[in-house]
Image (cartoon, rainbow, N blue to C red; front, side, top):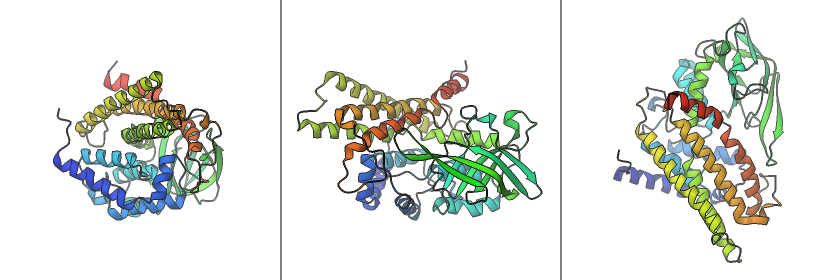
Length: 395
């Protein structure tokens, strides 16, 4: 298998790099490099810049606004976004609910929602996890009862990322309580401004406000907001989660963080405090770089094999990418903590309070804490090992 990029692919990489250089505001890039939180307006402005270029939903079918790029071009685009760094498109709309709608939704849903997702006219969030249903998602209890032309929804979702910004939420709801767990679930789109919805923040270990509890009390939703068939939502959820794992290795993120580790270490070297001469630290950094190169090659093999597992069916080896990718993201944040040593202690938990004089060291500890989650979302690493044993190793 030839994993070298062609001349055309290298030219495409340069095109993406030039676009990022010309269009990502310097302030936004600095905030991303230093780990600061972006405002809602900053995020939307950037995503609309991507959409204007025609790149916000690059992997969608061309009839819905996609680019028609090859798998390798998609890989290059994601990697360049992560390494610059620049913000990737809003995952909940572009990578999650969008593909579910254009694959299983009706024509009216496609016509209305897909252009709005591409331009972030609707900010989406994900209503899957519940207080007693995380890794065992099929045990969810939130009910949607059919009343003539509406569903009446009652229940609770939790760990709902950025629900404080959201206009819409896609929910898994139990529509047949008599069926077995997986068979009685439906996929329903809900307007977050509906009467009966309450959003309550959860403060995370890094001091940030990123996730929420969302309560549904007698929320009335039109029947036309059902995606696909009633009680088939579990199939759509599996489709969504498998697609979510494809880009979860985030090789470019770890590459950028290793670059940042070396940059910060060299800055500290001028003060006589560099860890680069420490053989233990150097060994750990080298081990991360070797594992990252192995992960990159594995991801390229998965990209090269894309499409061999049937239309709309991602390679089950994506679970390997998820495990190793999340472990490396955590390892690199830990190394960055080691680089600055005692300066990591007085971290600032308010990640949206950036200004030109902000101390960049204050966001390294919050980033470390926040990255504890990456081995859990998208299906915990323990669950991924079960998937690998069944579908890859066939044990």
